[in-house]
Image (cartoon, rainbow, N blue to C red):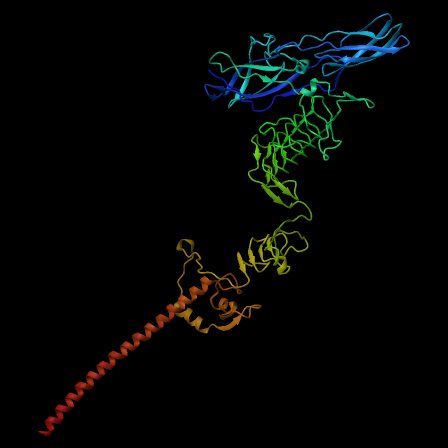
Length: 608
């Protein structure tokens, strides 16, 4: 079995900040990684062993020299603060005098200064100051065995999903997990060793061991420790060389936890707070960002934990594990956000603004990252909907609130061709106006403000009728104006009809013959003349359609077809009568011919 770890997130340290006065505290390390078994991401309950170790004992004893006047020890000048102290050490003053005593104050495992509690008498200078040494650099394993950094005896059960696992090292609520002394993290060259077993074979060590030193600045005397006049711990002002006129007199201001830091060569950086193990940094490496992508000068981290700025003028306002790596990129807070594009903005949870000029907001509805795909985008992930004018959107985007007074859901679309020509506006949505329930208000409208006060298209709120050119449609589709179409294809399927009854085509023909027909135009449309009956006359004659103000095309067509049938019947009858007359004429002609023949015979006989 071969196991290779893939570090999915950086190591997170929860450590106490500020000055340690009395005793060391325990720490918890949240570690996230990935394991494979036989080349496949492991899933299930894995068995893990953990150990922390350094290669050498690096703890050093603090030293100092006492001074004063008149035989009194009035102060101690620290020549070395030492390292690795986990509790306040004893201090002893030796020499010709007696009675002097003092109390050490610790900062990051070192003796920061000694406060005199009694100056004593009879001392000569310099006064020898002896400070107890710190404990040996500690090592740790999950079950308390293997403290030399070797493999522990007992394992910790950890759930693994698709290779990913998360474990809280030092959380003694877990089986076979012991607490971690916070002081161990103050040592350099600290490594975390991990052994893993999938339960089918033995344990294999994951490679390489992980470095856990939280911040190089936390282990060196680059901090003022406290502002001398104000007594504020954790603030340091770092002067930096002025290389150009632009950077003249710039300084780095680093506040909050001593583990916060500005990288070498960074100028004008500000870290306002946060840290305490979840360190904040400016100008230090950021995962997935090239180390020399852009200067981090004039960056700002306001607080939070494990936040980093790696771009000039970049800002991280707070939150956790946020990164600003683009020039002028902003992450106001939240969790796991990254603003990598120049002038980009990322906020929420897991928002990734990779491209320049992008704005990305991601809600907390998914564990997946939500990122930009092109420059100058505005992207929103909001599973609960986006509300404009409403706190309770019922759709991915809702404009207006039906429960709020004077609320309207309107959008305006505007365009212009080039730099000249007409500007166009179209207002679309549901306007507000409770003074006019019978008009356009509360209905869905499409309105061109340049074409009067009435909208061009309306879907009525009370009936659902659609009006084009009218705000008061009287049918499912009511159009004021000419409709041009290549064809109308209304349904006329027998299966859609009922209550069949015969009609008399001759009767329909007679009514059509009596129907007044005139030439006319619609009011306001004199340029378009028409010929036809009035709806009132048509309705009085045939009693068809919805009312006496409309003529349905299906009724006009049906009446016309029935009238044609009636006319055909009438012509057929006339033709039959004509055929009968033709037969009678032929018979008469035959009789006349016979009579003429008889007459000729008689005349012939008489002449003889």
